[in-house]
Length: 88
Image (cartoon, rainbow, N blue to C red; front, side, top):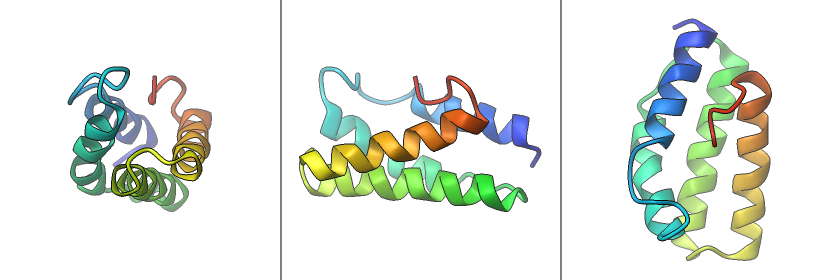
């Protein structure tokens, strides 16, 4: 899967689910499986997608802890560096 297509998939996944401002933990939980189902031959991007899925998993498991929120922020910024606006 090309970078552009993978970026579109990430953006589509993140646009689904509960409203992140209303239910951040539920939103994070809803993103893990769909993100893990995205596969691309672009290894650096695949690693970023996997990291974001792990960050959301940690966020939901830790009920939105400060450290988990920081993990999500860092992982999201990495994705946005390659896929501008994908995590917005």
